[in-house]
Image (cartoon, rainbow, N blue to C red; front, side, top):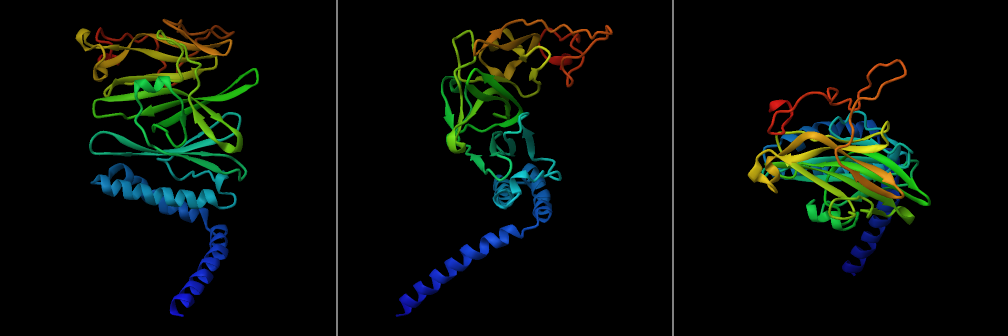
Length: 306
């Protein structure tokens, strides 16, 4: 009898929670939840131990989901979360919310949500792999994702085929970083897939491109509307005997490009990066974040002689 009574009470408690919980979510104060997330950002990036940072990230994720699950939550701007990456697709189809957790061994854990507007839900990407050069040869589901922070989105329409090119960064290890040029497709019912065999290379057509370089240098990888192309630094070993050891790779003196030709992003080596002229004859910079394209690099291939 006691067991039956307990089961009945649990059933009522579960039913009560099912009714009450949505009401609690609806009544949640988004700015109040966001304010609780603000100090967690510092712990995620600066906690003394891996465990402390991971625990702060788990709490941050939980509060983010509480907001996204509530009515109107997928459109909430999160303006007070400076460490939360927020990148919106130019066509308004989705935005990416993401952050990373640094580990003591030099690697990172990544958390990214693909958020659709107007209450259409979201997809959480699960960091279950490591980004490698071999990943250029395969596709991924949201559950198999390799982990990265995306900083740019470019919609692509080729005939009846619609997809998005993402540019991302991975803090890989203590000695090297990686960047990736990726494709993302939104399938029926919001299913997400990564990787499309559209990137030409010297070794054949790839699903994505992965670039690796030394920790102490920067790599430019961005889309330039003026050239209708993705432009990136030619990464070279700074020492002749370091071929294949990416801890010694840095940008050389040339740039390469990807241009869409008949549905394939064709690789263009040594692309012309001279500054275009406006109608008034004034120079226009191609790279807002690196305006001086005429700056001479030292023979080692590192920018500014560093």
